[in-house]
Amino acid sequence: MYIALVLTPWMLIYGISTILMNHRAFFKKHYGGDLVRWIKDKEQPYGGRFSAGAGAPMMAEQILRDLHLEGNYYTNLSKASRKLTIFRNDLVTPRRITYTPADGKLLIEKQEFRAQPFFERLHRRRGYENRYMLDTAWAVSVDLAIFGILFWIASGLWMWWELKVTRRAGVACALAGLAIFTLFVFTI
Image 1 (cartoon, one colour):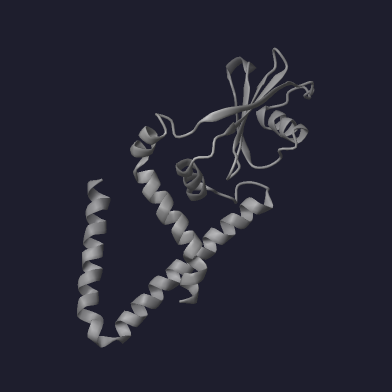
Image 2: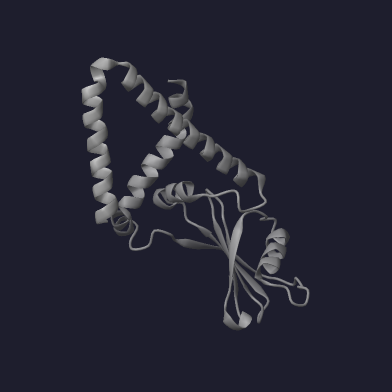
């Protein structure tokens, strides 16, 4: 019971997000074709200088630092280095920063808040591959939730086995679950 109470937020997140991801077509239609909508926040000149041979990650980190937007991100440098796009991951307000070296400008856009992309970000969030403590804390909490679920399963199996009256029904349910799972694994 106490593990269930602790795991409630994670179960709700994964349950709701999975339903929303399974029905992406509905939400695309609901949002008018795109799940994600970027809104221009501001456009500004950028006079930052980069060291010779600076790659996209180094440039992105410097730009994010100068904008006071440090944190988890990924970046894309177009061919011929004509445009650097930085996607600053944030659960509530992700940002897309586009730097064009030719004109020395930054375009900063933020993602309009929508439920479907928000829950999908929660579902897909990872944390161990970066150096940010909060992202790592999220990953640890997810791991703990997984261990809690495994404990739930193990304790449920143990309780089922100990209650002799439930063994037949339990075997039938376990076999049905295994058959359905196997069917999906080999037919999808």
